[in-house]
Amino acid sequence: MGAALTTTGRLRLLEMALDQGINHFDTAPLYGQGQAESLLGTFCRCRRDTLTITTKYGLLPRQQPSLVRPLIPIARVINRRLLIPLRQRSASRARKARAQTPSPVTVPKSSDSAAAERPATPAIPYTPAMLRSHLEGSLRDLATDYIDYYLLHECHADYLNAPFIDCLEDLVREGKIRHYGIGSGRWQSRRILESHPAMPWVVQIPDAWTDNDTEWFVQRGKPPLFTHSSLRLSQEPGVTSLQSISKRWATLTDQDPSLPGLVSDFLLSLALTKNASGCVIFSSRNADHIRKNTQLLERAPDFQQAVKQVLLEVTDTHPSIRS
Image 1 (cartoon, rainbow, N blue to C red):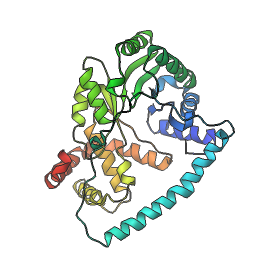
Image 2 (cartoon, rainbow, N blue to C red; image 1 turned 120 degrees about the vertical axis):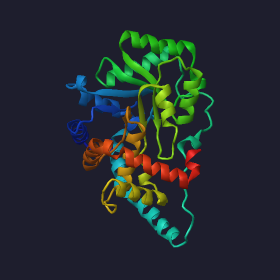
Image 3 (cartoon, rainbow, N blue to C red; image 1 turned 30 degrees about the vertical axis):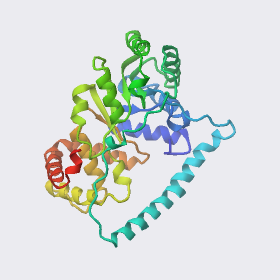
Image 4 (cartoon, rainbow, N blue to C red; image 1 turned 60 degrees about the vertical axis):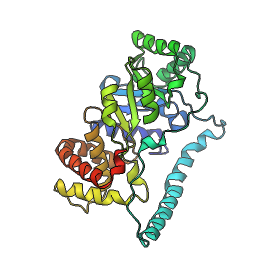
């Protein structure tokens, strides 16, 4: 939604992604201050049978006063062009200051360490009536009569109950959803899969480079496994160890270690290696980045052995990655 101030600019970005071979699009009622589903619905009207869609149940955007809503696109642009560059410059200065004081290389915590405190109640009641109501809203906004993957957004095992799960099964039989699952953190997803092992959950989880249990989810969820946020670390300050790891990977794959974007390329190659039979989701408002990522996808099979070799070397050096 931050790609342009105009609907035309946003649709053009989606069109370009489809032209590059991307045929799965992930959205939710929460995204884009409630506008993302409708935008994707406009895009999908004449091409629904050529792509698949994920949307979600469980989280909604904060309601904004009607007078404020037209200002949201402008606020996004201000954030992107002014506030984010300011934060990046500040982070850059902080990195330079840290570089002047040698310190041990640190490995970022696995996303499993964010196994977080459970909220007492879900944001939306987990009842059949509420489920049907919100699904109908998503179907209407997406201008479609079925959802390929309907995920429970930041769900916890304690939210689930038999009538709600039975309703999910009914919706599959009715053809309104083709598959259902969970789009939550790794810890929450583990609990759901362990608590309801007989249910055909499709799983969508964040997958940081230090997460070493992705195969566990591949084995226990219904295919495909969706992973996301793999590229996020390339944008974060202080991950100095990734620079040397990425250069080692570049050497093993006969690439120029000084190429720009090397860390992002390594992280995406790693994500595609860890989830080779599933779907790796990324987000971008930059057309060049989308093209580059799809080009990397074509070469990813050639990089798998090098990625595994680097991981083996890193886990020997940093045993904490195994935890």
